[in-house]
Every structure is written in C-alpha cells, then in structure tokens.
Length: 428
Image 1: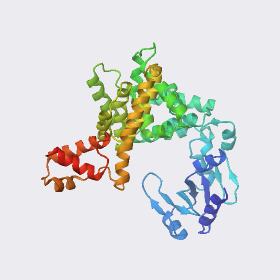
Image 2: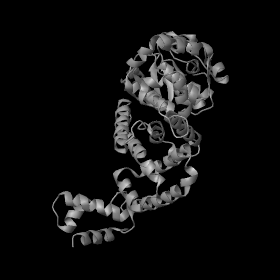
Image 3: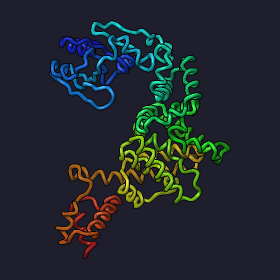
Image 4: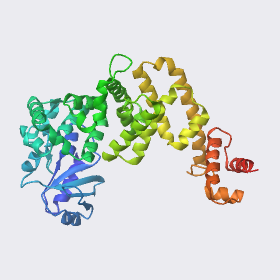
C-alpha cells in the first residue's frame, strides 16, 4: 500500500486533500491488487489539480468528472469529494464495503463498518439507508453482483429493504436505461455467472433485463426439467472452469451460455436461428456490447451443435473464414459444455476430440500464413491477384480469394509461390 499512499502525498503537495476510496480500499481490505486506484479529492477544479501535479486529463463524461492519469507508475482516477467531508462522501456510496477511505498517513476512515462487513462476508446498504436504492434502483443489481462474485451474504435488513422496494416500486426498474443494465450484467457475468443469475432469479430481476430467459422456465427439456434449467447448468459448468481454462475466460463465451438456448421456443431450425440472431443482436446492442463480441456470440450459438457430428476440414475452413478463428475454438469448447448438460458428452466425446484435431490443423495452417507474411491473413491481396492474372476488379477476384482461403486451410497451399501457382491453375 506504500506506493498508493505516495500517490496521495503527491496530490496533497498541491494543497488539495486526497483519499483512497471505493473499490480500491475494498480490494486492499480483501487482499486483492487494484489495477487502477480510485481517489476522492477535496477540490471542485480537477483541471487545476491536473496542472499542479503535471499529469492527467479530465474526463467530463458521466455525472462526475474524473481526473485520469498516472503517478509513481500507478494509474489513477480521481473524483471531487461529494459533500464537505470524507464521511459525507462515503455516505453516498451504496454498500458499506465500498464506503471506506484511506488517508495519506495510512489511517482508515470507516464510519459504516465496512471492514467489519468484509471480514464477516456481509453486504449491507451504507448506513442501512434504503434511500440509496430509491435514488438509484440499479444498485439492487450491484448488490446481487457483489454477493455472487465474493460469495457474501446479504444482510437481513438490506434484503428486507430490497424486497420491499421491489414489491412496491418494481416498475421503476423499467425506467433504467438498457446500457446501464448491460454494464452491470457484464460485471456480474465476469467471474460467477451461475451464482449471479441465480441471485437475479431469486429477486425476480430477470424479467427486467432478459424476459426471453424468464419465458424459458415454461419450456420443458428432455430430462424432465426446463430449458431455463439447462441454461443455468451451462453457466454452472462455465463458472467452475473459469479459473482453469483461459479459452473460456471471455465475454463471448459466457454470453453464449446465457443466450445459447434462447431459440428453444422455435421448432423449425431456420426460425430458431433467425430468432436467436435477432434476440442476441437486439438485446446486446441495447446493452452496448461491442459489435465484435456480438458477432462472436452469434457464431458460437449458431455453430456449436455442428460439432456434435463429424466436421470436415473444408467446413472448418468455411466457418473460420465466415467467422473468427477464435470464435470457432470457443464454439467447440462450448459444445463440450452443452453436451455435458444434455447428457450426451460420453457418446460424442470421440467426435468432439476428432473435430478439435481437425480444427487445430486448419487454424495451424492459417497461422502459418500470418507467420510467413508478418501478420497478413492471406498470402496475396486482391490487388496482387489482379496484377498476377491481369484481371479487372469484380466478383471473380473475391471468389478466387475465398477459394485460396479454402486451399490454404485444407493444406493444398502453404506458401506464396504455391498460392500463385494455384491461382494460375484456376484461370488456365
């Protein structure tokens, strides 16, 4: 913590008082390492603080302007003190474990017993103040996220206050912008997706952010349960593997777990695909999920069941070109999780292993192209193809490039010279 305090001291040399606050102090108390430290400063003029310390820029987006920069090699974000004292500032923070501050001399400011709650693994509203929920109802989802992520119990009074609020004012949840839901949901899914969704279900929150998931409680699966149960079981498997499998530690993987069976209401395969793509795209766009993540989720959901049957290298080439290579790897891993939930993993384990081998060969060949071309995904560009074959721009050039991708992925072409020979042969 010594380096963190050094940041405070450097800021206080400007004449402004500063404290470590929020997630930074909570993580320190939990024995975790903050990547970026959060500060409160008793100054309303972040620009003058930035000038005085000689670093940082002021970000005016959002309700509270922030000074972002780096001191002593540590990235920081600093906000103006809310209220006239640090104690008043802490009173505005939603849960007690985030309402702790550290002074530059190392002293602790903990007026609401946050350290006690951390030690006892309890989540409570700061000062047992239910008005904090009334001011921002999305804090309910944040409480559930923390409870799931850190395996903490929700204090009985906080639970009572939350449930009472939802009984009386649940309609206010509908007024929360979708992108705010998205930010909190993604944080909740990051480490403990199964527990997070279970908490959301227990507090009847799912209809507010994903009604299509709630509806799946009414659709039976093949084992006497529901499709909703299958989704929870997949999320449970993902959660148990999060700490050991780096491949599935991605937003796309866990979102595929959440949306992978969202099409179950449709009996026709074509209808299921269209419905799934629409729900995934529309819902995630509203949540402000990056487009590349949305594309990866669509690729996983649309392709994982294909791996239940033998897949040729040619098909893998097509999928790797149409989608991303990583998406195919993740889709194959997702197929294992889904097959385990469906009770068919033992029957198709050899098929999945063979598919994994075929896919690895295809991806190895594509990777070789990048190694030989210093990062390019193809041996030749469209312009080079036109020059080689004396062609004009047009559809034929694109078809030749796609054909060359297939030739590379199946091992028929493994160098620039071989690519040129292959192209000449196609137009001979």
